[in-house]
Amino acid sequence: MAIIKAGTILAFCGGEWSDKWTTRPFTVLKDFDQQAVVDAYRVGFVPENEWDELDEHGFAGWLTRSGYIEDVPNSYSWYVGAYGEFDPQIAPALTHKPA
Image (cartoon, rainbow, N blue to C red; front, side):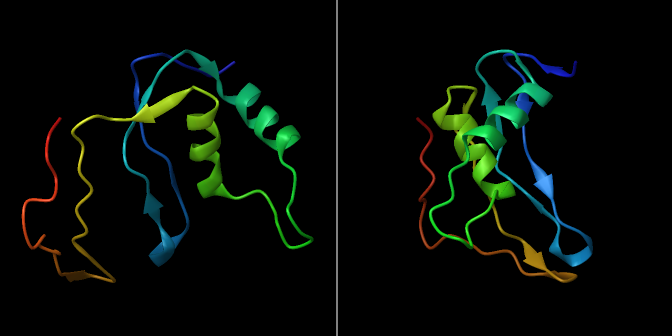
């Protein structure tokens, strides 16, 4: 069993090569077994149409709705570029306001 403990700061990552991605951070609200939540996500998935399938990005949303994780308060995601180009996006005004 691979248990992720309550209080852990968790981010998800995926993709390959230039398609790599990482989510914003989440706080784990209650202990959970990784395999158990993966199995529950798969079993509970109901496709909306014939092209709908399990999605790696939908997993974090499912964990949030299921009460396992929540956004980390006062966190901020800053886009700084792609494909080897350092191109930070500067907010036009202070849009991130700590709680």
